[in-house]
Image (cartoon, rainbow over all chains, first blue to last red):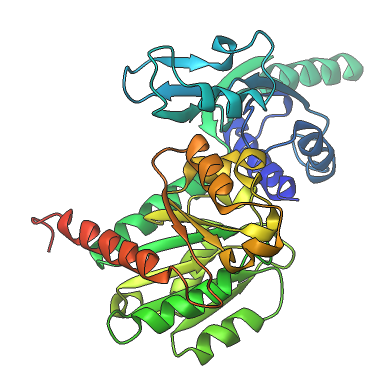
Length: 140
Length: 226
């Protein structure tokens, strides 16, 4: 449901940074415990970006693992500490089993965000020159 | 092709606004609680009982979030407390900008405690900071005692959980003790209250917690600030 407004915020952020240049790629990081479903973002992006400089841009999603911090010994660990290929459900088990130091005083400290890392844009200046060149040759 | 670094959270606009709201609430010395629960967990009934217990001793204000209708704010208004209704028009959670808009209609300076009743939903309200001092989860027993395991984020980010409808325990397979244990497994720092908002059972401990949070906030006030 909320992916619509999140996608609009993402699109606004991208257009703000592109400074009038055409966007071809957007690199994003999604935490495993964020409230964002990449497939939904892609769906809304196609719709919302129509007619903007981001239309047709490819979205690249990198998934960030859940990170748990022990408030007693300070150990920070992602869920690979508890399982090789950790699904979301492992978080609950990890919190129940506790830290290697024996403490159960744990807090979820990462893997909840949705961040934009970078954009790729077409260089307008080069394109402008190319068009100019083309125009000149056609004039000839 | 040129790469432009961005390195920004998509929800940064919300985070910045929430920070500004938190500063404003701190300056005005008002405690802000964000109620998060499933639809039907008893958020509004708990609010009504809380108002009965505190009105006259503390000045309360309420911000009601619902997808549609003003049914809840009418109940709160009838209880004698200033209230603003936010309709999200189908939106599944409240955002900081909605709280900012609601504050234009609510004199927070005249309040000791503002309670925000979020949209009934245990998922995404957790992800949007509203500038509150604490999130409070209301989990009612008929929903099942495994709720903390299925919706861990709500419990992981809250400071308190109110287990509601405990008077129904004899009729249900769910157990209050199991719900409590599951909540503490997700977050050992949770303050847990077992109540029946309907009968009034267990409400004193919950109301005492609000007093404690308010005292804590006032003690931590910056003495240099005007």
